Length: 542
Ligand code: VG1
Ligand code: CO
Image (cartoon, rainbow, N blue to C red; front, side):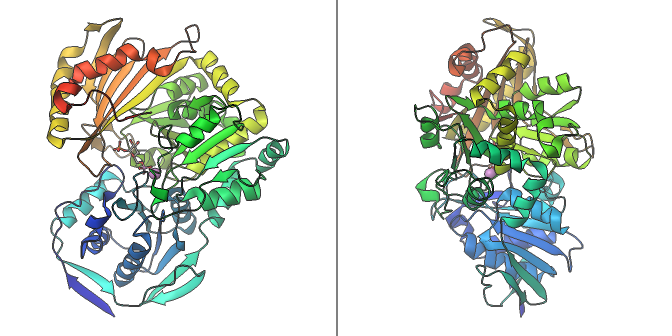
């Protein structure tokens, strides 16, 4: 039976950079998740009888939340709900499945790289039929609906057994449980040269993939060890755990330190990679070299023709504004368009749909293409393997060759986590006011060319997004960028992105923090970070 349950607006259901993220106990409040899910459906039209894809990254509360979403979706009239077995779907696999099935949309239960567990984070993201995160028009409508909602519809049917493949009925809705890997694996086979990668492994090439006890473990075991013949044990931390083993499932040199240290040690394998909670991020590390995500995007673009799925070449490359301009240089060389969007994958959707961009990337360990509408961790790893299988050179030699051709964008991000919200907003307001006075000023060797608060005009639908981060741009291509995170759940996180371009004739072999030392000092001084936040140093450097 379908019941109508009275509810009230919760004041804190505004989606951020990537859906709604809150502490688990917040989501466990009676009616909290139900109300948000109903607000999503209330903001959509004409889905009666259509298909909804549903899955999550396996974090604490995933299984309970799946049951709640099933019962509300059935009560609201979806015709079919397709769920990954065990409630598991990586974000990229969910995007692939939405597109493959021609589904109306999908709900992904994840707080991505945020920690999990009873006191950790949980999250809900709505993706549209194209497979990507809902654009701002929809997330704004969802938020508006959360402010006035007064009831939700829910079936009182028994829980669905999400661990058994097959189909059952909930009210009038067919609920199908599918293997989370099968369709995704099939898609990867259409893009990459699996034979060449198999031959690479057969020749003794060694990989270490760290699943970080998050969602990519099952995908990595099946694809790298199963299909491609990487030796058993190549995938570590491959079992998804509700609390990610107590770790932060964020693939960067700090949180994937074991992998990083291994790759810098004498016994390092040829290639190292890790992915995040929901499988859309990737970190690439070679023996004795960490590849920045910005460089990774540029290197993939420069070598695109080596992968069967991209052999025809690229339409364009898009990067988020704070991502280094390394990909722009490749685009210029290839004679294709380069796009600069605000942070968050939702801004790439229109460019991909319109065929303007083929590759997209973010400095936050996100890379992807038009094969789906999310960033894709396993895809990026397969892409690198495909390139290495053809080039038969080490990661470090490939990266050095790239710098020698295009120059090097030295790049770092400094995060100041959990700072006071008012202090953070004051700091940004102050910077915004400062932008108008900076052009033409010289700091040390660097002269400011322009400074602004980044605004984006979507070239496809004409939508406009203001206040996407403060940019201080210097002559010669160096930059300092400031923005506040939209995915955190405690206080505010200030992100400072620092970049300096060195041409091929310059010194390409410096330590990154040293090469950027003067700009790092300037980034702190300009924003008065210590005076305003009490922080002398960042909490995380990537
Ligand atoms: C962060 C990253 C952004 C990314 C977003 C979602 O957002 O900076 O590039 O798209 O996370 O990624 P913010 O607003 O905290 O800077 V994921 O893997 O958390 O879905
Ligand atoms: Co993620």
